[in-house]
Image (cartoon, rainbow, N blue to C red; front, side):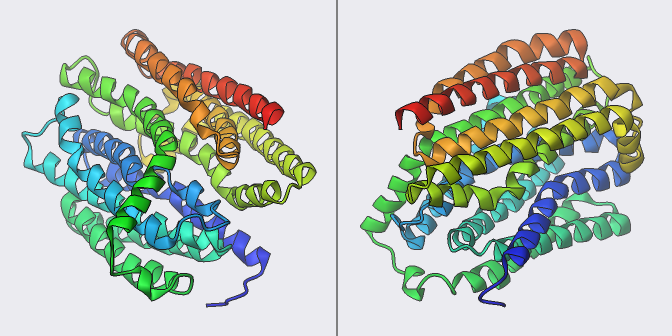
Length: 419
């Protein structure tokens, strides 16, 4: 692999990798929706949303912290140890949560699917560790290649598997096996270019302490990430409860997940400009504040323009296109989709503020904002969904994102003045 890639190569591979990362969930849902019935698609939609929530525990939001550790406060070995700890936490906390939300644990199919999806998301956790190393060393091209090929081949495997034998459990088992092999053969292999081999095997009490210190430093970021995904999941949990009590028709969970996809695509905007986040950290470290704020301005102009165009296109042709892609009639959800796309714009803008606060190492200030957001989600989601169905879920989510943007912007102004 080229040891001195051009900036163009780095940008292209980073873009392709993040496109694949955003598209994989969409592709999985398309495949499941087309090859499985609505009941299984509903169960898959809920299970993958739980996987998306619990992967936050494994990631512990260390990625941006690791990538912006340009003075090497912690070694890769320290980050590796931290990831071991967070992965253990990810697995041992799952069952209590499933019991808490009254998850269906009576079905062997549901249990098997939940295990496989969580194991698959664990692969994401460990691949992210190495991608953070690549980003820290200004090699986002390697991280991009990792994401692009791993996600692309995973989609192909699931598609071919379900097309041949229609068994969702077998399909995800094959996806899991491939992901494990890919991480060993690609991520771990190329990581050796950037850290010494003595980091790998021997661990001491000091390593454990350093790993715990990383998690301590990232704890507020983790809480924020976990709370935001709890907010994402709140409508799905309520819809699941409504389905169990037969107050909603089969397929509603699937429909909501499809409509919610644009929110994750809008968050892709942040991933595309990820190289600029590292540049921001470098500019601030060097005291080049004029360039620092210039980059921030460029980021917001980009997000606003892309957001406006995306919302307009979604309103005009969004539901017909989604109906064609997923093979499900979604034309009655035109307003719902538009609201969610706009919410995705707000989410992306708020993420920029969060990244800036992380660079300042003042991300702990966001705790109050996230608590207010979560309380608002709890208070709004259930009555909105009961009274207005999927539209209520979309409106409650949009209101929470408004709180997110206002809170993030206010803290940005505060930090800018004080620090």
